[in-house]
Length: 207
Image 1: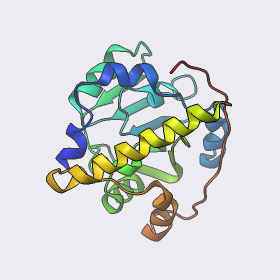
Image 2: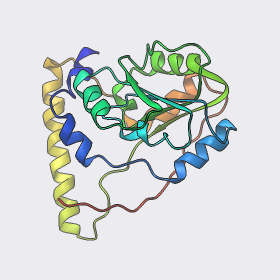
Image 3: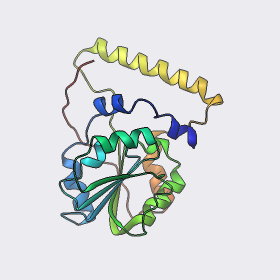
Image 4: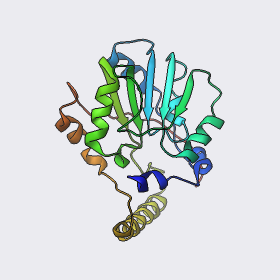
C-alpha cells in the first residue's frame, strides 16, 4: 500500500488550504453514540494535515492523529497550536496505540485509501468497549447554483477518473469505492451496530 501513502506527498500546503472542515453537529452526535460528554482520547486515522484532528481539540482531553505520510504529518504539526493534539506516524492497520485506549476513532475523507479488513480490525482493537467509530466523507460536487459550473466540474472529475484508471495498471495505488463503506463495515463483524447518516453544512469559497 506504499503507493497510497506516497500519493499525498508534495502538496500538503495546498491540501490544507482547500479541504473542508467537518460539520459542527458531528461532535455532538458521536459523543452521544460513545456516551461521553468529553472523550478522554479521540484517534483520527489518516489525519492528513490535521483538519479533522484539531476539530476535536475543544471537546476531548487528548486527540491523536495517525498519518503515514511524512509531508502531511509535518504540515499538520506546523499548523497545530492546540496542546492536547499530537500527530504520530502509523497506518490505519497498525496505529501503535494500546488496545481499548480510544473513546472515539474517526476517519475523515480517507477510508477509501485504506484496506478494509485490517483497518476495521485495528479500529476495533483500539476502541474501548462502547466506543464509536465514524468514517465521514463529503458528497461532491457541492451545488453552486450555476449549472454550467456543476457540469464543468463533473466533466473534469470524469476525465481525472479515466486517467487514474489508465495509470492504475502501472501504479501501486489502490482505492475502494465509497459507496461500499457501510457494507464493508457491517460485513466485517467488528461493530455491534452500523448505519449511515447525512449532515448538511453551508460553505463558501472561490474556484
